[in-house]
Length: 203
Image (cartoon, rainbow, N blue to C red; front, side, top):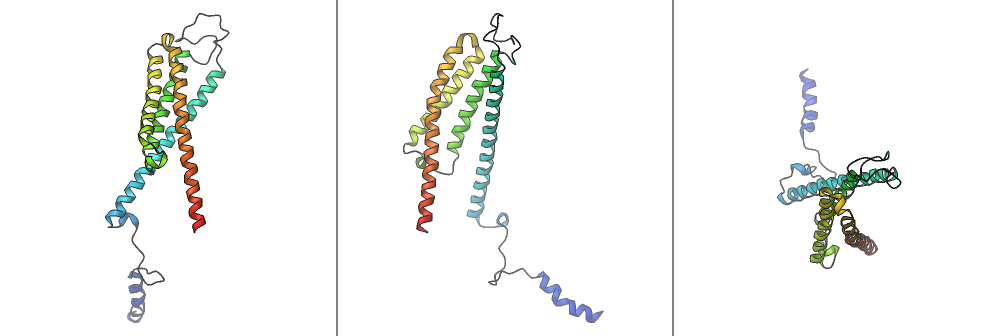
């Protein structure tokens, strides 16, 4: 037994030694256990951006699902040929829902999507000046988009009978700002792809 323990001693000592790479250096520590302050700060920023992107993606999926529900409700709408008197708060002629519920879903979903779009642009890793040449105008446009989405949503919530037409006109006007922001984002993505292709060509 004493001889066997003497033979096993080098093996046990070797197992306690740190693992080394082929170059002879020990393997580096895990990133989350590093003492490099700048590295930890960068990791925290990346983690925060990851959470923010995931949250915005979930809200975008909720908006898409709400639009699907609105399409289904609109297809089941029988208000046009209904002989009953108009009452926006009551479900008429075997429709799926009332006009008030439908419009509230539509306008508040548009407002939530405008907020998600603004947060998406502001939380991007790229500087706003890299997305659009005039960042101040882009930020002002985002604020107008949120306002043009919030005002009609509040109007239809307060009184759909009185404010239905103005609310829809504001919504149509807001589509111009939404289209412009979408074009800016698309141009930014295309420019990023071109930059990546140029880097690959240089390499």
